[in-house]
Image (cartoon, rainbow, N blue to C red):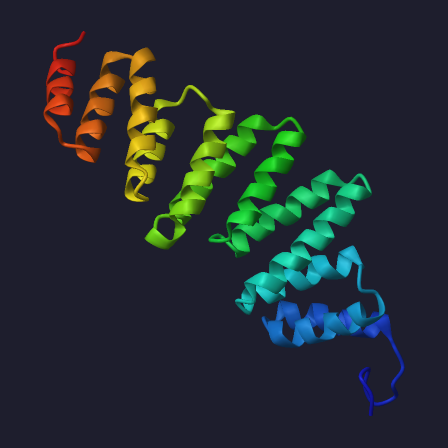
Length: 216
């Protein structure tokens, strides 16, 4: 008996049918095994990688899942099928929500398609998945990306300053807040002064926070 079964005959249609059936039943290990048989013969087949990726994600095989998502999406984009590629990246962010690259790829493609508001929502949706200490670099990167599509959002800059401070980059955080304080409304200014004080509770920041309370 060889790789392809009892007869060693490569029956693509049968293998694909069995793989789809295994996926429907939630048997992702079996589905992945079958789809990989096809990839032995057709290693760059975008449609097969697109089918394989969700099963690998369900098996918590993040690296391999993302590799298949990327391969399929790249092939679709090269073929002019950007919407199909975007649908794949959307599925990737759903199946791999703590994988930064999937969110970044999705938003980047949305921006390249002129869908800036969608890219903004993508970054906003991603942020809650990146709260842990280990994920601070990715959170900072997401906030910077969000600022690039929404540069006037004070809340985003405040969140970025807080993330930078928690990452031990207090000087950078305070510089960001100082620049932000030059061009905001009184309500936002009070939040900035409070954030500055929380990062560095000095006399200067205490005074600035107190003074902001009287700004109208």
